[in-house]
Length: 68
Image (cartoon, rainbow, N blue to C red; front, side, top):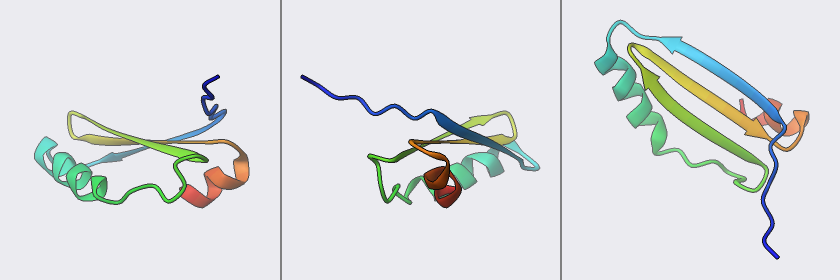
């Protein structure tokens, strides 16, 4: 029996940079930082144009506040 973690709490942050390259540099810089508790939270980062989008997902509201 496999178990999958459900992350019902979600927060998305969009940060605009002057250029697409700046957004890519920021993403690459932040990618090296691993989540401390992968079983309780998840971070997804994407670049769309000059925007860096960071989505945090968590098992409960308290954990979401901590990871953001």
